[in-house]
Image (tube, rainbow, N blue to C red):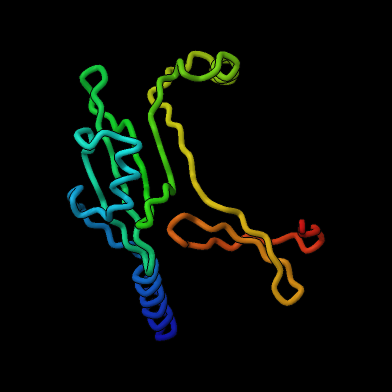
Length: 165
């Protein structure tokens, strides 16, 4: 019985600690509080007057900003655009809502063939920005994904694949 209680307490501690380590700090901010590099990128992609929400997201040593624009269609408010930008001004993710009829005819036909009678409520175009890096350390091949904010995601490297010179 005591072992179960101790195990439960330990599990709760581990879960709480893990949540603290992986937690992101999100704070809503004003446009003027953005770094200049972020402001420049934002204004290249959206009109300042259409920005409905700006969130500063801090995660360990990385800071990024998420900006949303609103749009009204059929008396319904929707998010038309959502951009995540690193503090350096590099775009990490760009999401835009697009009309269903913007899809190529072949793709619409395939969707309707697979899902007869479908009523599409929302269609988003999502783009992520990163670099895939392949290298070698002490004779071992390494591969990782480098995001615009400097975050690195490890990827299993194929040790048999030759590295291009």
